[in-house]
Image (cartoon, rainbow, N blue to C red; front, side, top):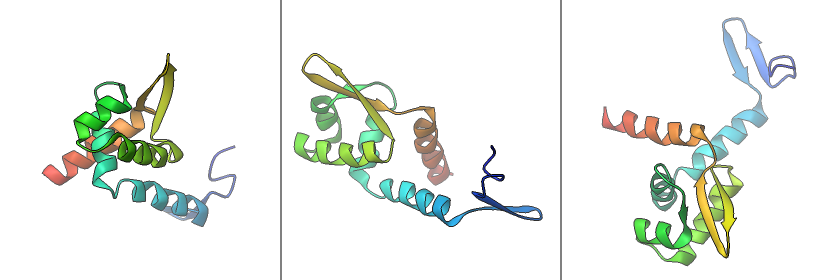
Length: 110
């Protein structure tokens, strides 16, 4: 079933508008990008997956602060993790996250 058929998108002739819940979810997603520490974390994960210690060093904040921000990023489905022994390794959850960061940087650099 398409988003249009399920009622998630309303058709106003040539204009398709997502329903309120989808718009709310989109606004929540963009709120996650409103913190420079979270952006730095996402940027550090664009090239490779990293443990908290390496993210902390790359971003220049404490491991505790990184862990706190990673929690928000995980809730927003922007990062994922896997265990490697006792270490937890983080990465971007998918190519969409990479694209959002990359496109955002392109937009502000124009």
